[in-house]
Length: 425
Ligand code: LLP
Image (tube, rainbow, N blue to C red):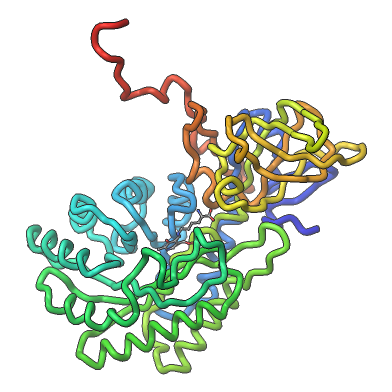
């Protein structure tokens, strides 16, 4: 089997390595649970989009919700990437990592006025606006600051991305975007507001999408609107097709970024929109296969119905299996000889939903380290302190070395900012 994350991830003489660094040794050196990211793998994933878009007006805005570590953001900023943000906190992070505000698009269905002010002062490239009410608030905030807010309207194209219901966003029943049949009126309204400057149109139909067809359907729906809006004299500089491209966790066969981009460019050309600037908001496809979560086996608990392999990483470290029943590959960091047994790999958290993998054939012993693969996206980003568990450390590797890019959280820091009641000691 090819490891997801290859060629950065490889098995060499029984030991799993990321860019030549043994994961078992990294787990020993930095402790577990430990996220390990490959910088070259991230840059390769970005380069695939960049190559496919060469010579075309475009901006790739990394959807930083997938993995917001400063070193990850710095890596992409230095490679010329823009960013898709969804909160004031993400804006602060991206600026701290050296991202350029004029390459930032601000998405999200519920922005506060304070966040709007913060983003206007920073000078973001545009706001992806999701409702008529948001247009009015943004107009008021911008006028109070004496500026005009650049806006793109997020359209809900009502296409089925064929993905998990929790991460499907482009259907009528979702909370996201402005309905296609209300979009023209919304553009007229936006164009009439003095605090706004209409600059584009966008959509985002879901995540972990493994087909090209839903993207083409969504693009067609957007282009229909572009034509209708421009016919009324409202110019649109860019078309933003969102993110969502899937990765292989196991047997999935998502299209390459290059194939997706080529198909979209061909459709733009065919409809006479070849000169229009194209924006992408990829998250998972830039970082997912570039990261692993290393965890240590604490206890083996064979049982009558099930065998449990209890590890030191839990749902608070990696929520995707518990939340979406997501399947993620689990591999021993060092292979050992023996007969494989089927284990449910579970964490120490007090919930039956706390599992990382079910029914996995593994040869393991207590003290062994395992790696959960394809954990670079929505892993650490969704980690919590449930059960008062400090969050994991993060390390980034490249050919030159190993960099600790986030220290392991200290338990005593977890109650910083909390207060005992007065009186009782
Ligand atoms: N743009 C917008 C407006 C989004 O809401 C998202 C993701 C993206 C871009 C990036 O999508 P991507 O390329 O990463 O698929 N926690 C879930 C995924 C949630 C995605 C939310 N929105 C998971 O672990 O599968």
